[in-house]
Length: 275
Image: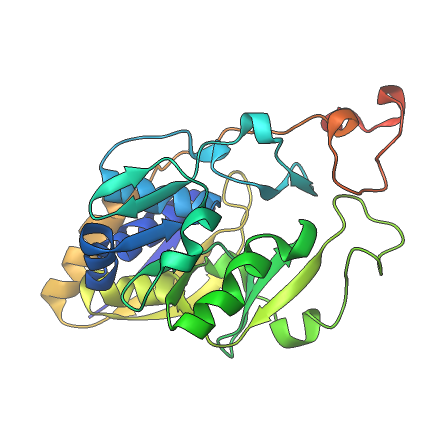
């Protein structure tokens, strides 16, 4: 049996949140070790599924692509990061536990791009490469797994090629924050395709992308498998349909400390949507 459905960006994030939270190794890390959840809007959906409670997902970000620009949310607006240790939530920044992580612990990291070859792209604006600079090499050395939930709306032809470009000191003019990109070739990726397999044991095909009238960034999938499994999948997708888009939370350009071509302009000079 085959079936088809379309997911908006927020609906995809909800699906990814459910799938990552359902992984046995994630549950194991949460209850018996460390489960570190980096900031990112998709990761906020993972937290909601793990905690079975709502949160201000739009504030669980640092860098974000919002209102048509790359941007950084101000420290005063961000939600506190979530790190689980043996079932309890620690009130610490993720970096505070990096030297305590061992195999069996897990970092869940946001991503900005994914390609057909299994590479993940992560944009970096912070000093020292932000979370990637803080965690990636350390966790590779220690053998700690990193999971990257990333929707297919972020599919690009080649992360490896894209990562050859950019960099804060290489970009002369940017409509938005200056960034570089890290190419991760060995992370565990969870897109909608993996999510369908995790939750329902079904094969999924990325069938189409895009839309308008609220379907911008949407992905259309076809799933195939036994009738009962496909019906269970479609029932679950119907329950996800209608997931609302995240509210917009953006620091004003005038007070943002991130390097950007808009930086330093008078309020009157900025486009109205950025003021």
